[in-house]
Image (cartoon, rainbow, N blue to C red; front, side, top):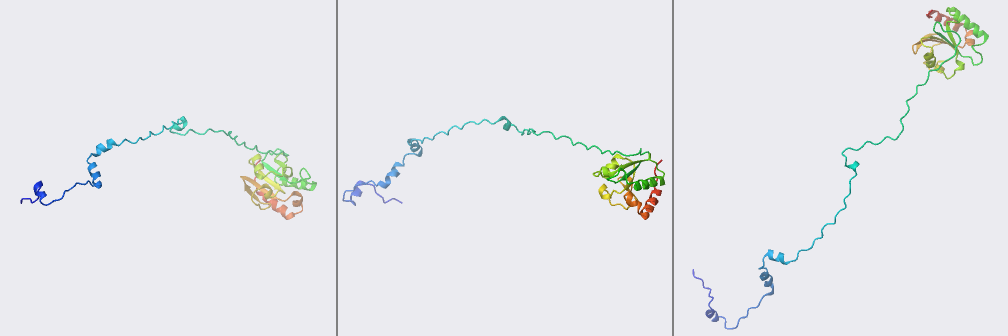
Length: 218
């Protein structure tokens, strides 16, 4: 279809009898200015100066920290001395202990006991065929801090006849008086103190019966 739009100036003059002036619209100015390419605009605008980052100080890493493994801490304390073993106790005694029999008495006044007590002890050892050379006689009152383990350590492989020393004092389990038992691998008989035993016939008979059953090596 043929267009009806005319661009002929003579034809347009028939419709517009007054003078026509072209006025620029300010709002259209940016559009005209935008005819320049973005690349040209970018080149026209001066680049913003960006300051270079300040140089950081170089910190040297100590060689110890640079190693992959941590060095062992030095030992500054002194070495502890080895624990010293306590020396076994020793006990002076009367007799030669030829038959491994130890007699403990407990008299804080006399070396062994009173005269009556010593006489009773002589009768007791004679009843089991022991002489003064066959046993070792120790007064526990001279060694009140000693315990049975001390005596057993010093008098190895011996049997013990104990007069007047309690089981508590020797730090051993409770014992039946006048009876034989085993403590720390040693045979032991606990009985009354010599003077007290001398006045107790029942206790003496019971003790004598126990001693008759024992085998004192010859």
